[in-house]
Image: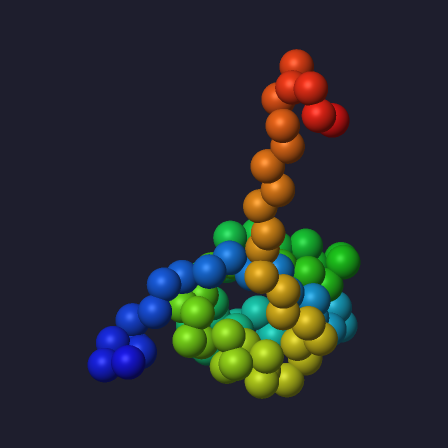
Length: 82
């Protein structure tokens, strides 16, 4: 693990305190998050972060949940299994 400071980025979706949205987002940026989308009314945002920085995001005051983005691949419409 000699390159632990340069881990691969992962997509994340976060739920944060909507009453403190702007402050929490700024703290998340300082913790290493690159924000790709914000939904302040819902208290959610998405972004990318080096995998080794996930614990730092979870530790930010006002963060309620950190989930990795997931990709679902559906079969083509004409495939025999639907």
